[in-house]
Amino acid sequence: MTMEVQGLESTLKALQQIQPEVKKQFFADAKQIVRPAIDEAKNAYQTDYLSGMSRAWAPGGRPLFPWSQPKASKGVAVSTSLSKKQDAVLTIVQKDAAAAIFDMAGRKTSNPLGNALNAFQTPSRVMWRSYEQHAGDIEAEMSKSVDEVMGRISAITKLVIL
Image 1 (cartoon, helix red, strand yellow):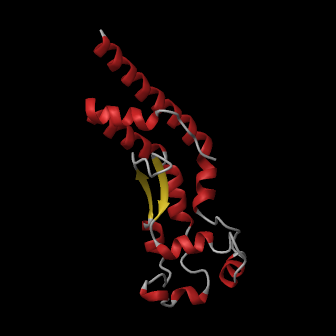
Image 2 (cartoon, helix red, strand yellow):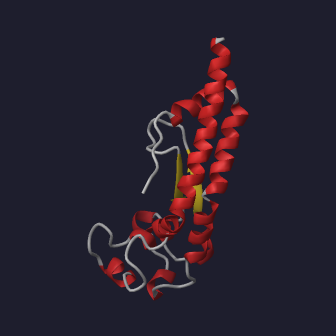
Image 3 (cartoon, one colour):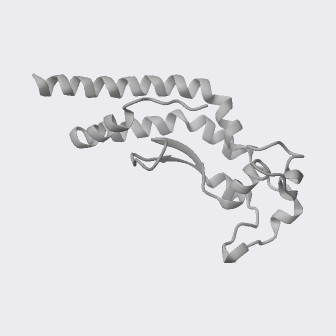
C-alpha cells in the first residue's frame, strides 16, 4: 500500500528554490511520521534465526552474512529523494544485506533459505509487515503534511502573481 500525490515532487523542488527550510521541515516531519513503523521494524529482528546465518558468506567477494541483529536493526532507515529516477519521494529501506535477504528470501522463487525462513514468517518478514501495522496513521499524517506543504506553495504562488 503506497500513497501517491501528484505534483509533490515538483512542489518540493520549487520549495527548494523559494523556501528551502520548508522542504527540510517537510522531510523532518515525514521522518517523524514514519518513525513508529521504523521502530517496529528495528525491534522485530531477532538475535538468531538459522544456524548457518551466523557464518560468513561472501559470494563473489561481497560479504552478505554473517547475520547480526544490531546491524539489521541499524540498517532500517528512511530514504528521501527528489530524483526523477526514484519512484518515491520518501521510502523506508533496509541497508543491511543480510537483513534484506532474510526479509525477502523465497519471495519470488522457492529456494532452500527461503523455505527454511518460512518457519518464522512468509516474505516480507519484517519491513512490509511493520509498515502495514501503522499504514493508516502514516497515510493520514502524511496527507495532512502534504496538504500543508501544498497550501504553503499555493500561498507563495499567489504572492508572486500579485
